[in-house]
Amino acid sequence: MSEQNGRVVSVVDDDASLRRSLHNLLSSAGLSVGTFESAEVFLESGFLDRTGCLVLDLRMPGMGGLGLLRRLAASGPRIPVIILTAHRDEDMRQRTLQAGAVAFMEKPIRGPALLDAVRSALGAA
Image (cartoon, rainbow, N blue to C red; front, top):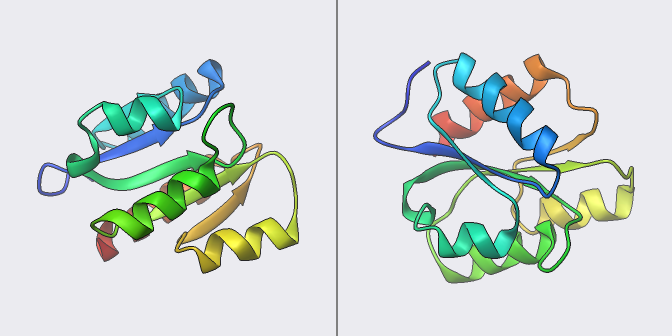
């Protein structure tokens, strides 16, 4: 699968090793990928308009994943968001899905499942 209409998959996670792993996984599938260590860095990056799918950590210092998800939902174009978390929490799962996330996945992430979710999100974008 290649970049769709100039769109990239943006990965926002404060864990540098996970960002590298996700970058390698997604780019090995032929996707264009941008990685960011925080929600704030992502918002300042200029990638927002180019993002076709956002893979977003739920818990991060500063603005968390739910905060960014809500901000994006309130302010602009609909970007499919896949939430990642190391903390199983059914209430938070429901809150993120209600806020507009297209998927909620627990860490450790299974590569094939994430690729399927990203491809589905890009197809719906």
